[in-house]
Amino acid sequence: MAATAIVIAILVSLNVIDNKVPHASLALGPAGAAGLLLVARRAGLSWQELGLGPGTWRRGARWAVAEIAAVALVFAIGAALPLTRGAFRDTRYDVGWGDALLTAFVLIPVGTILLEEVAFRGVLWGLLRRGRGAVAATVVSSALFGLWHVLPSLGLATSNQAIGSTVGRSTSGQALSVLGTVLFTALSGAVFCELRRRSGSLLASAGLHWATNGLGVLASAAVWHWGTP
Image (cartoon, rainbow, N blue to C red; front, top):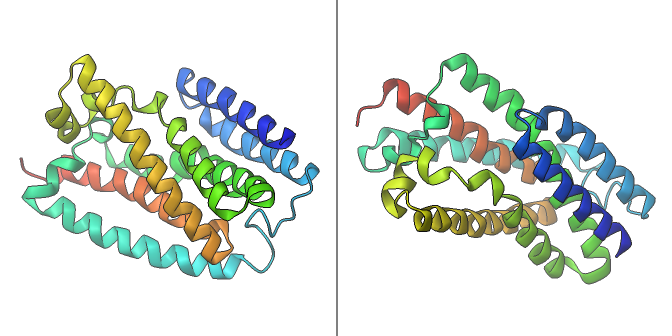
């Protein structure tokens, strides 16, 4: 329990700093992941329990490749169809291709995926699973993963056209967008946890996590560049 409390305290601090200091995640991601792994190892977790055991890499990579291919197909169809294209009009990614590629292949993997997967599907899930079992580990880790996204979602109703037009841009609309984000990311966290459990590897959950984030950025950039209203 002490190790779990330490991990949560570290994550709260990292979340606040990351949302106040632009691009702090590029340093906080690797450093935070390393620090959390150190806490977990000192608490007695094995690399296998963390989803990083020697025998997990190849299997996890196979899962990740399949997930990325599936998400790429779905996003390509969604961005191409007029009915769903608006969901990809996120003003944060109305940028040049250089910035979009940098975000998708550097900022997101290093600053987001690395820390979140190590924290929520590796360290927290491993600690909670050892003490409470897989179901409790998934529920608690996913709930905390949802809350992790409160600060980043505060301006979502303004930056995303589809969300803004659905909930509005008033204070209540902003609150609804935050609540929706927390619920959606908590459910996503449960899916990621199940992938990690079934595969035994963090690469499986990291693959789907990157696909939904990184390919989402590229799809959004493509819609802004080539899409029509």
